[in-house]
Image (cartoon, rainbow over all chains, first blue to last red; front, side, top):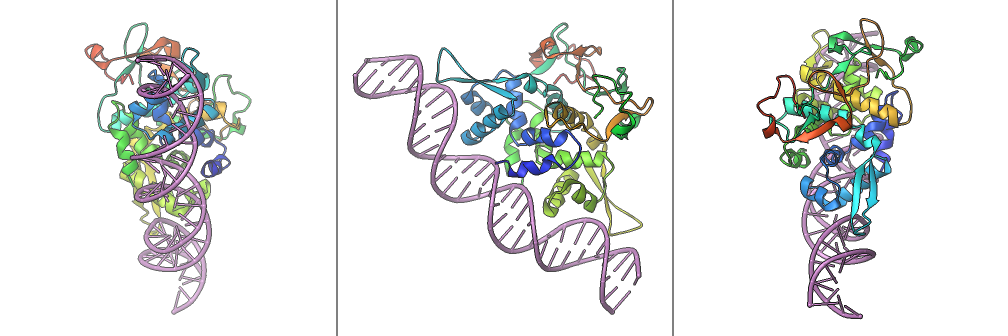
Length: 162
Length: 162
DNA sequence: GTTTTTAGTTGCAACTTGCAACCTTAGATA
DNA sequence: TATCTAAGGTTGCAAGTTGCAACTAAAAAC
């Protein structure tokens, strides 16, 4: 475990390798999706995903190790363990939704269900896209790569630019 | 190849499994990132990523197979092959950026470079997040899962809701 | 016509995966 | 109290996947 992944790390200046170290594994996003849908127990993941026991055990362990899930023993039944999303885990929602939207657009064409809605008006959320620092939506033609050194001083807090 | 992935497909109503069939493989997102950065040739991917030749060959083939990259032989030097992003490939940008931002926030702390900027003002793009159909930014507390059947009629074109 | 460059393929060893069977601890039942 | 069942694992094995190094094929350079 690990040897394959460590190489990815120091290849380039990019958050991607460290993200992929956990989330690049085959079942990680599926487990995350189940978590977002409220699944919390080992056997429920097992049934929902059709994953092998040992792999699920291993993946849950790795997700916990990386602070994406939290392992909480139930106080009322000490056999049961709850795997809950941490804040770090919740922060993966945009990435997951974006991948899901892409898969839905180009994949088998099966509409996803259930669907994320805005609690206020019960309407589906918007398609995820890139925005400028001031909120204007950006298409690929509006973008450029720039060396960080050339924009260091005018950078605005809250924008990461990557 | 493929046997492992087909199972993911029909597990749930979700675009995620079909997205992960290609992009869930260990090197796919790294190759995609290199493509977004302008890398187009076999040997350049090889050097930039430090990936094994046979794996790169295999992954490029799969990305082409899935219509994410296009294999274009150069007319001036017929040894050379260009791997170019298709529209389907470009559409993965939000997912990649979102993952990258997450990795940058929680990973090794190394700032990504180069950085995506708005061509108009040369400022870094905003952090990717979820928005309501009318553009309001949404946090996780503002969201709910809803069965597609309950919102089928009021659904707005351009919103996918997943 | 020999060498170099680009984009691969092949063989092998090491690692990872999936499946089935087993183990461990805690509650439930009698 | 002993036994049964449920929840969450671990272990062993066969099959599949990966990485490395060495080899090949075709086109360009010298």
